Amino acid sequence: MDAAPDLRVPTESRSEGKPREVNPNSERWRVTVAEDALGWWVRLEGSGQIDRYPNVTQAIHRGRKLAHQNKPSCLVVHHASGVEELAWFEE
Image (cartoon, rainbow, N blue to C red; front, top):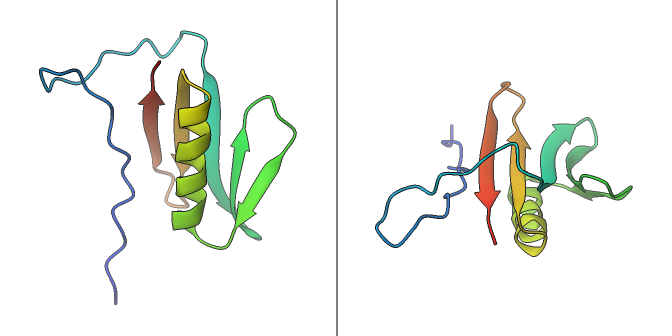
C-alpha cells in the first residue's frame, strides 16, 4: 500500500525564518478544496464557479493558484478524515 502524499501547504515566513503572525479575522478571500462523490472541487468564496478535478493534487494546485492570485487569502483543504489544512497567503 502506497503512503499518502504529503499535502501540507508551507506557510509564508519572514526573513528571520519565524512564522508570520496572521489575523484570521481580517478580510480575506477563502479558497476551499474538498472531495465529494464526483471528485475534488475548488471554489473561491463569493464566486459561483466550482472547478472539478479528478485528483487531490490537481485540486490543491488550483487552490494554491487561486489563493495566490487573490491575496490576502486563506486556502482550506477538507479531507475525508475530517482534517482541515489551512494556508495563509498575504500581500
